[in-house]
Image 1 (cartoon, rainbow, N blue to C red):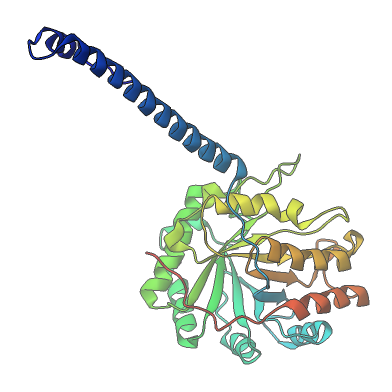
Image 2 (cartoon, rainbow, N blue to C red):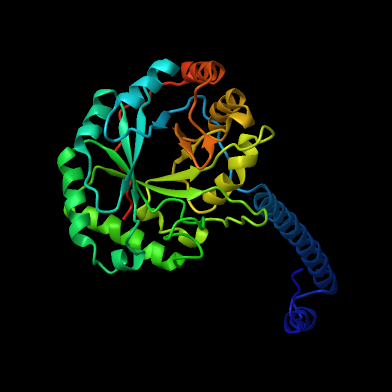
Length: 345
């Protein structure tokens, strides 16, 4: 509430030109005006406080999308041959428009495979795995000769490619991951790789920062990805890896918490970059849930890990699962040409 100073009140009362009723009227007006101002401030403050509370408790806003833009697959025969991808396409009734392969450190870029993918209307996703090398040596520039050669080959290819480096770093099963390599070292290595590619002129790269889903259960405990975030100028898309192990699992349960955590870091497009469902989890139902979840959360799409690995038959073989894929693929709308890689730095 606004109050007049004692000096101002004394002057009003003692001045011969101010009769007593003027002083009384002024004090009454000032009091009422002060009350009005106080009420307005209280209302505005309460409203702002409610908005802030609501935002803090609701988290990032998720916008659904009516279509899945990217329907991707990884086949164990890639990048040696495109046969596996073509067989998958025949089984689901549509060519994937995103195909992934894993590239061990020291292996060159595979332009023939990428060209085949482009001929089939797909973009290639390369998983660069820094095995048998430390992230510290990469960050220090001791692997620059290899990186420059790789970047030059990607530049020469010309068409867009997606590059993921040292994926699932918040998990503890890779030497570059949590509990093995400091997050700060990962960030330094990631930025260095991106900078080398950019210095080489490989501007046709979409940089995919790829994390594992958060899991707070014991004894797994996969933490949130924020310590490994390299900054928005070094990331084009965000990838999230996660799998359906149980029949009771849902998209919201498996991927939801990680989508929210990523949205607290960036508004960059999100791709489910590696996923699958164990047959024991009811593959047909999970395929349908995957399509539905991607649309509900407004994500880019997903890459199905079509391989038998670590005792789990992620590979789709049942007619019912293929039928679920065909139903989901019918609602899938092929995206427009790949936009230029978004870079802000």
